[in-house]
Image (cartoon, rainbow, N blue to C red):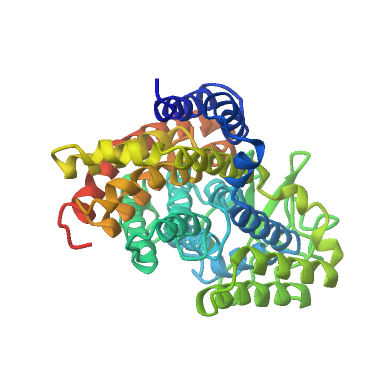
Length: 471
């Protein structure tokens, strides 16, 4: 058995074992690279470490560290709160605000699971307060994360565009981002009307009857200035210091997220307003975008620079932020890329690419690659799939049988829209944050939807981006 075949079997086993067991896929991939590289290929430890993506490690750590600090100092909550106020109490627009905010977060560099983890609890609180279908809210949050996920400075975008650039393929980062964003917008329109969005049209927050206790396992939302957790007209200790149970008279109700503490709804200690630290954080995020897009500065190094500045200015914002970095995602991506780098060194990538290219029907080969990406991603991590499958498709693309830009777009979208599966990280986060009494229903519907996307998305993206041959 050749080294190439053994490495392919190793990659399949990495995905299979990590899917059916609790073993971390990234750790398993590094172990597989060590075992196969040392025992079969005869590589040294230096050769194996040479495939570790140090640049990608800095990007992942820097960006997740920065967003952990932004969450700590309230900048992320301020952005969500301001966006919610902008809809003027129109309940039908609240899921779309969650879509847009999540898209902005991922487009600015937040890891998709991190963005979903931030927004999902808030979105599910709106579901409890205003009787919105949690499946509708969850899918729009996940689709929003995917919509922004392929911006040139995002994690998905960085991985995809980096592979394209390193292999001298024709690429179009802007078209990749726009195509993914528009695809997810259309998909979210389908979700909106399929899961009860029509019944939300015309409803306003000030017309809704609040829950008696203002609390739920999924979180709750109350009008700012209203007491929470009791039927008293007096504000609870630790509230915002206002009294009365009515919303402000001008401008409609101001919606404020409310957390849960020992079963009691707790109003945030201070209103969502800008302060010096939040302004500095916003300036840092804007600098990250401008520096990356217009000055070609490294995203990871810039994110770490902003993080250090924020830590020096406001040390309390950085407390616990390192622990909330997406270390699991970091290990996952770096582990997969380390294994794929070994496959590249021993010629496995060329071997697979030549095998796909030898298919007499190149369009069929392109469809098969998209299907593989979608099915595996529904049960694993999209970041890991992008890091593994795009390199596998490189020789096929270099053959010129299909357009490289169209193929990359189709594969990227097919692998990301299935994140709604509850077996994927984003789908699992939404399920975990759903109201307890609806959690089983949310799980089943997300499973059906995610598996449906695994069957439908590859065919649709293949028809739109690969078959015409214009990309």
